[in-house]
Image (cartoon, rainbow, N blue to C red):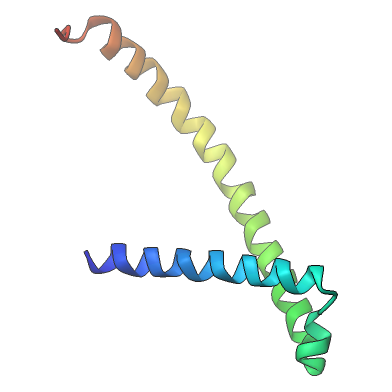
Length: 86
């Protein structure tokens, strides 16, 4: 229950931040206007996030494919020969 509330709150914060950022970008307000010294920090954070996402994708895709090679035939067999529902 607590985890669900935390995830929901985090999602709301992300959504509100996205909307606020979109409005500020439409008004021509950038990060440099709000925090002039934050550019190097934000560039570094963006680079680190990109590296983390690339690593996650590079790691997960082969593992998903290998798992699917095992799971899909088992699922097909269970669907074909398993108990029939009403």
